[in-house]
Amino acid sequence: RANDGSHNPQYDLQDWALYDCSSCVLDMFWFFVVGRFWCRRGVDTPLFLFGSLLGAWIFSVVDEPSWAKYSLSKYDIYCRWPLALFLFAFMVVFVVTSLAGLHVVRGVRDGILFGRVFEVAFAAAAFVLPVAFDESAHYHHWFTAWFVGQHANQPYWWSVMCSALLWGGYVQGISAWGRGAMLGCKAAFWMSGGSQYCTYLDCYVHPSDDGGDDDGVQPIPVPFVPLDWQNCSAAGS
Image 1 (cartoon, rainbow, N blue to C red):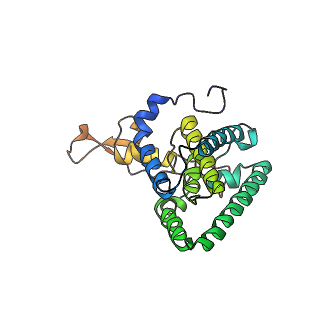
Image 2: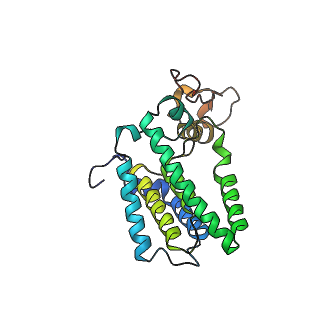
Image 3: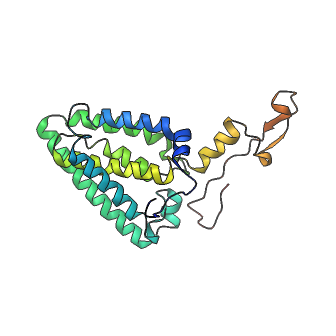
């Protein structure tokens, strides 16, 4: 923000405290526990502090090029990603896979691999699978960095550095864009009309015939229409 990098100018510290603070506290607690920071040196060391700052800077810089301004969603990948972003994504996958392999090798040697694999599977089942097959699934970089970083939880300096870099990416994502919902506009649509019955969605409500409360208004059962990745020229809700 100080360097006028990519960010949401309408999102500030007050918005974070109002909308995202409680969720971020839970994120930090989960990252602390799964990341083994309760039994290894990390958050208060120069290595972790430097890695976090470096990670925040890297994620900020990577967000600047025009080819990088697309989301990790099915529609964007199929319909909007330029070639440069595919090449960059392959490079990132190669680096992450290599580091994951290093963690696996050390996990085998230390006799902890089974427990770590169980943790990854449990976290995936809890945070990824519920939305993985939804057309609106959008993996924000705050989530990707948080999810991967918590599993870099071995006591070696390179593992601490990995988690620090990704924690910096998480902090950068939250501070620049907010803790966006994994289902994006679909989550906002459901919260507004399907959960809270917000009156500003006048186009989705009609007078009630059941004589109930809510000032004679009830929601119309109009489904959310996501962007169709199989038809890149189609529009959604």
